[in-house]
Length: 254
Image (cartoon, rainbow, N blue to C red; front, side, top):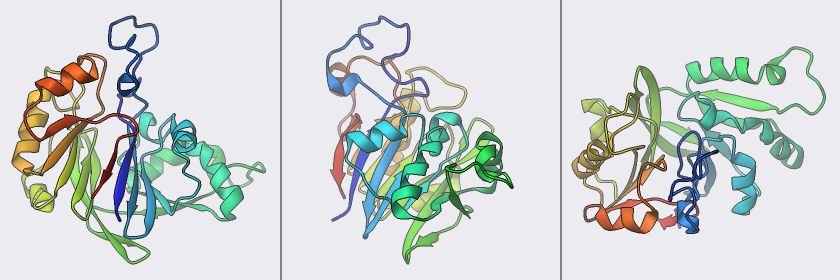
């Protein structure tokens, strides 16, 4: 059985947002409480997390995830990598440097952000990473193939990932024409949007809906959602057929 759990479905500042008293941030519906965007994937025997933002520790604990085979990173922004210091716990219990799969540009950024983990004379107890550099071509973890999907986050190249008939693309506002071929035949598709109107680096809601319709999955889910959208029940009611707002804790069998 393959499955995905949405660990977080919020923007870089999460929902509720510090200092905000809008009706979404004050909502008592747990589906309106959004940590930074991340997913947990069980696929062909692998246990993976895509992106480890500042909420990584609380997401792992809330979902009782005690072991992983690897973390895949879509890009270098801090809301997607800021929790990597907490890999120290996995180092301790699994007695190994932890596998991180990312592009070269993300790796170079990690060396600056977590400089103490890459220094020559390391302080005892710093996180230990086993960095695996990937490119925009299929790669394997334990003989299981994963297909990256190139997208653009304004001027920053980022990666989405396809696991069998499930595909995940966050933090993007453009997918090159040739990359849509990699999305053919997916049954479940996740795409990002942060607000209804145009955004410099994310899809607007109409743009995200258009991408989802083009991909044509049986079910599509919206993630990286901000408090600028209505509360969950209202938002879900307005969306087209087969397109749904994701929420933290949502689990999908694929």
